[in-house]
Image (cartoon, rainbow, N blue to C red; front, side):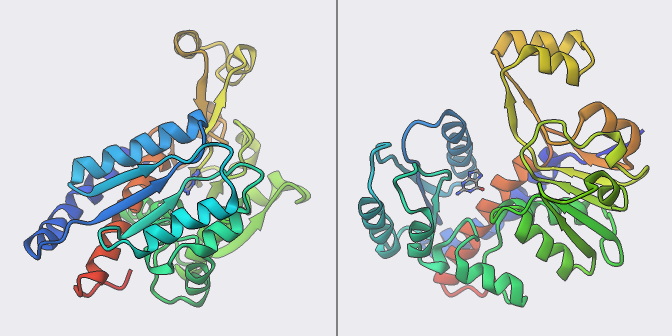
Length: 309
Ligand code: GUN
């Protein structure tokens, strides 16, 4: 039976380690501050942001949410970011993605002061990642490396396959694995023989946004599988097919009208992997924990306490 990589447990460890750092800042009269910009009424984004704000409250980090309407323009959002860049009490800024189509998302992300980029996805910080320089790292990728490290899963010399090439997950996690001395392959929707390449992986990271599509034939027996998918399934027949008519899962679906499923087939992975991160309860909680780490580290830098990132 595969070992379960428990993201909630690692999240709690990371938060416990942050507490004394936040106390040390408080002793200097500084409270870390995070601003979250949430445009419009995307239900998934609203849940993510609520969880981020709750994590701040748990730790004693100041937070505020700015909620421009769905109709906001690029210039209006640039003004919001500019104000936050200049505000002394704000150490970290996060603009929740996706943004509405009329907004130039790349311009908005470029406008965030790199030292306040709590998400670690500003092009300056991405450049630092590629060059191996200290800077805030993208939260989900950093969380994945924490999960591997804390479960003592070796990375150096291993073959890692990343499925998905997004700026938030696929590209940065590939570089973090490379810096940890894995041999890394990045795959995507146009990759021929995806299953064959995935089967070579000692560490397989699934981040392409297709529910339960990494099935048993993609998984080398004994591999470590990291599932980054967060797919909300609203089709009961699909839930029945994925979970092979599990009464428990269908009851959960009937109660909520949808079910959260990762990119990895949940039953296949339990049978074939050596270790895997489940959905929910795997990578998700770590993304928020690393956002807290980035915010506290930014506050420490601004307070003159020496922290690289
Ligand atoms: N939307 C989904 N995940 C993320 C994330 O990690 N950061 C931001 N800014 N938006 C997201």
